[in-house]
Image (cartoon, rainbow, N blue to C red; front, side, top):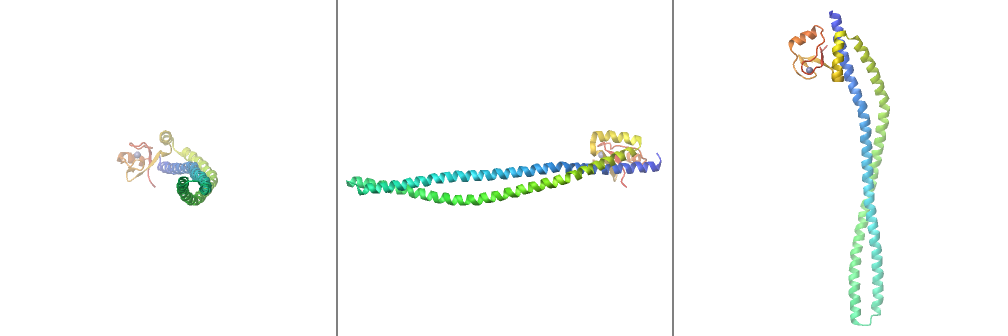
Length: 238
Ligand SMILES: [Zn+2]
């Protein structure tokens, strides 16, 4: 091989490696898009569930409080009734029994009143928590929409870049001399986009293992050589 075609082959390998790296990067970015959309949607769902849970808890509290208020009302009516009976009592014994009953019912009502007040305070806290969860959900929804729009805008640009680079890749591949092309195709079949590595300081940049001197000289002579350790097709830096 003449030195011109050797230099050409080396610079083609360099170009091929650059294109492969750019393609890998673009494909990762393309994959990342849907992952980000899914993550944002999962976040919306999580916030919806959280809001629904708080609302359900608030409802349970409200039903329990309504029930206690009805109980209290019934208790107060009962005491009124007992007081009427008190006025009509015919014996001390009956009078005392009614007084005892009234005292017991008043105690029950007082406990209920405390519980109702507590529940109303708790209910105020729920109102605040629901408003917060609502806000968080709205923010998550907006974030998901923005994400979606951004990714939808980027995707065609990324795909166009992929198409352009793939065309560039085919062009560069067709420029490779025959023996280099055979080895290149074999390694690409096995290692995909990870098929090339630069030799830096006598080390394969792909696996960081030393490249023996005789291999280095073969590369310098323009022979297509793969790394003994990782099998990547080796080329020299500029
Ligand atoms: Zn290697």
